[in-house]
Amino acid sequence: MDRKEFINAKRIVFKFGTNVLRGDDGYVSLPRVYSFIEDLSRLARQGKEIIVVTSGAVGLGKKRLGLESTEGVALKQACAAIGQGKLMSIYENGFDTYGLVSSQILLTEDDFSLRKRYLSLRTTLNKLLELGVVPIINQNDTVSTVEVDPQYEHMQVCFSDNDKLSALVASELDADLLVILSDIEGLYDENPKVNPNAKIIRKVDEVTDAVLALGTDASSGGRGGMRTKLEAARMVTRFGGKVLIANGKIPYVIKKIFEEEELGTMFLPQNEGLSDKKRWIGYATNIIGKIVVNQGAKKALLAQKSLLPIGVCEVINEFKKGDVISILDEQHNEIARGIVNYNSESCQKVIGCHSDNIMEILGFKNYDAIITRDNITLL
Image: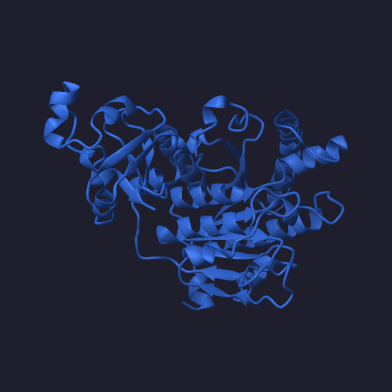
């Protein structure tokens, strides 16, 4: 796939990280942000649908209060509350200059994890795009309770940074392309901050475990890092989308990308074409409950078969019927996720049993399988 084909996209999600939005002094870089808005407005006039996922609220609030750090959840949430209004006003005024309407959408984990809210969000976003509005999306740090609520102690949340959030938005909207603008040129074969001779990788055919291993932690001021960007790329390419990671500090980088300049790293789409429901099961839900399966069950799952009670070795944490749970192999590697047909107590009782014995053991029988194959997403 060449550059021209790669950038041929109708619906595009752009993710702007904290370190791209601010200058060296730590304050928001208005010239850079307005250059983004100018380039995005040009794309919108060409008939493309634009969605923005933006960081920056906490940083803006921190600067407004004159703080050196945002240690502690309550302080970070307070900074987000102060900074979000300022952040949105910058986007709103910028897009208004080019005759475009923008809208603010603040999201928490439950907006994806709860299926009805997930579907409602998708309907709203599609309607905004139909109306020619540019959605400006951010994590709602002010009300998110993931870091303070005890119930989340054992939970795998669907997103904890805007890299993952942008991937979820791209997935939910069937976006053609996700552009992640960071403070690094793209993916390198080694960490360029450690090895100055590291070489950039211009094209990735598939985000394998070996590619993920090239990821690094977040830089100062950000929450993600190259690894979270690679995880986002893996998710989006699985449903057939394209991803580009590029340096957002290059002047007029968006304009240059869509003029086919060779910038950043391209991640090519895969052929799996996961359905919306499979994407939601695999990536958009918060996970508390887990089931450990034996080698035979693992082999069956990889062959696209259902999970039967005879293949279950262990039940971890409590969950209800209809919850999405994690499926682990005997080494506790996560291999899949699925919608469970029985609660954790019932699953515990039928561990290792034949499906024919479920009625005798439980006194009722919903299904032969703990999780049916149509409700399983392999990871």
